[in-house]
Amino acid sequence: MSDEKNEYGSYEDVRYCAVPPLPPREFAPDVSDERAAAIIATGNKWVNKTHLHYYLFENGPFQGSNAEQDVVRQGFEIWKDTDIGLVFSEVSSIADAELRIGFLRGDGSWSVVGTRALSSGQLERTMNFGWNINVPGPNGLDTAVHEIGHALGLHHEHQNPNAGIVWNEETVYDYFALTQDPPWSRETTHFNILRTLDPQTVEGSDWDPNSIMHYSFAAGLIQQPTQYQNGLRPQPGLSQRDIEIVKFFYPADTEALPLPELKPWRSQLLSLGPGEQKDFRIIPSESRNYNFQTFGASDTVMVLFEEVGEDFLYVTGDDDSGLARNAGFRVRLVKGRKYQLRVRLYYAHSSGNTAVMMW
Image: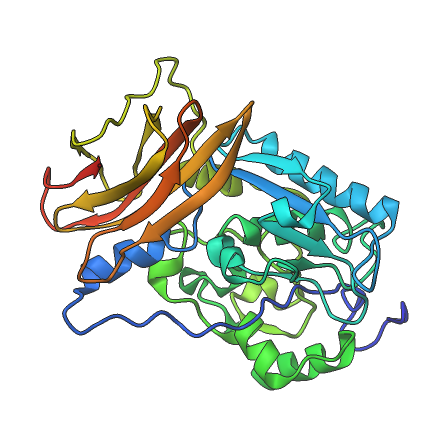
């Protein structure tokens, strides 16, 4: 992209993340608005204390330079330093990674949102950097932190319905068609800029123009609020609100007590509020297939991990949110190994009626 300035002013050289479009989630007619809102608010978030493994392509068309890879590593460190309940580890085998990060030029910078990564093929990218991010300014480290934010389940902040932004729409379409490489289509611009997010997907009620998930905008793109008619550029790095939001969904593990043990044929009540989580340790006494299931009128996501040293490897999981069934799966456990079951509540139809059991 040229560094020359045109009628869009000094922000012309800023490049932008283009999240791949996905259809909105649809619910059956019997799912209430309150229930749908609770599901969407937590949807695509990982269960807390998930150990996320990321792989950086080192060869082939998705290869990145050592310097660019170091920028991505630094981005993960920035999120780690917020003291959240997620763990990040780089792995050398793509087969071990939930997040697979490429550096293909001309494909834009983007990331799938949160647990959508689990729906991608094991050899497919879940994140890409389409330009050299080993540069100062918003095209560099902040781009890496932004894309990792999407991987944690965060959305674009400038699409927050509470922002009240009124756009010069045709100017916005022209700007992104002229300044991005490759040029953005009207559909891409609408999905990533002009489209207002469903209020149920928004993290928090306040608009944060300094969020790492917020774009910079040149003069002439925004009509309202009037103070941004001459342009909007967020402050570098994570905002205080970014940190508060990510810590709400992924609180640090401060409990020193051992987890309760889940044993066969002994149900455990789940006294949880929306978005809250309960974890159990599992030490099988014999190697065989086990069934796991939640019980009660609730929407939950249930995930099983195997403990390997200080790592926790994803085994399987199920999500019953919005469905007329309970979360459940059947899986083989091995005697002598250790596992953790994590259950997060989206919504309970009444208090105190949710439980989990293995047999």
